[in-house]
Length: 320
Image 1 (cartoon, rainbow, N blue to C red):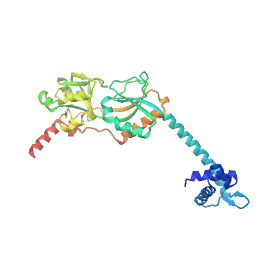
Image 2: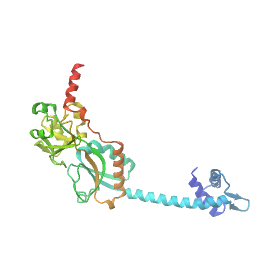
Image 3: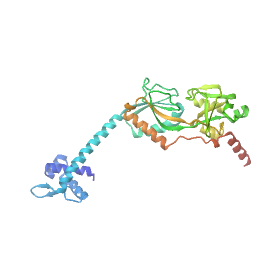
């Protein structure tokens, strides 16, 4: 039996001064009222009501339960009201912008899970690699990858995305394999139009920082297109690991300069005003943060996907 429900029945008995009065007030049978009171007495291990044929009175324990029970029931009602108000504030639409390839790869199951948790929130997702104007275009939030430009926007980092410099084995056999970032200048590059780092590529090797630039053979606003052109042997490209994992696993692409680590990019939730975060927006930001904390984005292992590693695996396969 529900203790809070039993408390409410007991309080009504005390107020009415009779079981029958409480039963009529609560639209319950007298026996049901008696069972609720008996449940409390058994739970607390004390008699709460003195029953006589002429009148009903509370015991000392009954008076204490009444006083504290009124506080409990009142606070519970306040809590229920507050939660109801919070749920009402969740109702409505969230308009979200996200990078195209990232959204296709990850956001389906993430947003499906969010809708299961918050069915009263309507979602509108716009996938575009263009950096939208949140205020002018009516977006509540954007997911952005990489270095953020200085602005009045608020950003919360929710994950990290690795980058891999790669090319096809065919391209490297024709053009040669660079051994140092400065050697990239003699190679055809497949450049992403919206790269936050510009077209200069930055690397770390141990405690040292290096950079280099490929020739602008092709510039496109689609990482998928650039990946496919790299597979076709058109040049070297720097792309997020999540776009490359299958091509690297299959050997269609191999890492270039595997001993040099490209910068890791941050994944951010970006929104307009810190002091105007609605419960809807807060619920989405927290959901994304929780999701990527539990499902970290895959980082490509350089040793597994270097050109030398692929060559070794082919030799080993022939030996078998």
